[in-house]
Image (cartoon, rainbow, N blue to C red; front, top):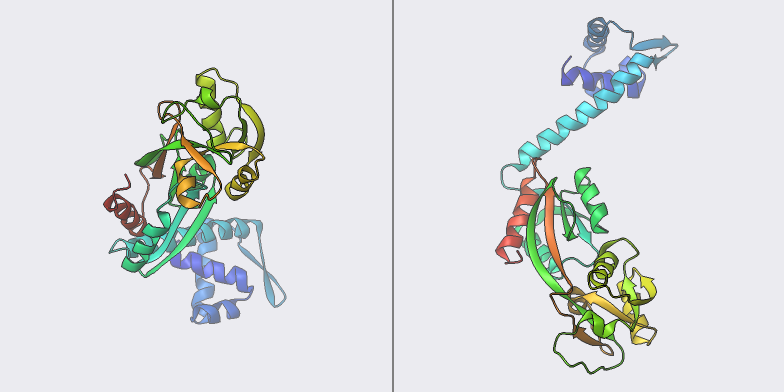
Length: 293
């Protein structure tokens, strides 16, 4: 069997009539019937049973149909990828983004659109660990994640390492320019993200390394809401520098935390030893060109 015969079989199954399938394929009925007979002889299995005017697909036929769809899809993907090898001027850029990963992403996307106006985009936002899984399953090609994570399966471009800030609605006086975690261990903290994930885990781990038990009054995975809670004196918070860049904090004071105590790295990843489309490669190159690595 070849891919053409499999496509013929897909049409026969979906149209349920040789005549309708032949019309869909723009061929005459006799050659199509011959192809069906040849496939049944090669496989030594009955694929189609007549039932009045229409066909019924046998169990063997249903199995072949399932694989035929998969092979047809693989062939389509192969053709698409081969066409993209030229220059990546078209296609879809599928990228995953951590909630607070890259403050300049919109600027780079705008530059990329100017360079490649025919490219379309699929952007998914999620936690870093889930983004890794989306890359493994090929739902997205690239992902911006917050480290550290297990990345043996991935190629990684380190973008930058950012500090964290303690934010509060009430002005404070600290003895040093960069504050320590012990300076704020009695503060009523709202932690971003949720327990065991992302920023929540990084902050808890930093306190744990110094054997400090922080006072946690709330978790909040919505950064905009978290900032409003801080502004309303509900509590204080620890956030990465990206938050300060992305939000205007008119009634909130920010104090940088000692980088030796708490930092976070941002990386751009894709699946190692797998095909990376030219469109995705062009996007990686643009990030490197912008000096965000």
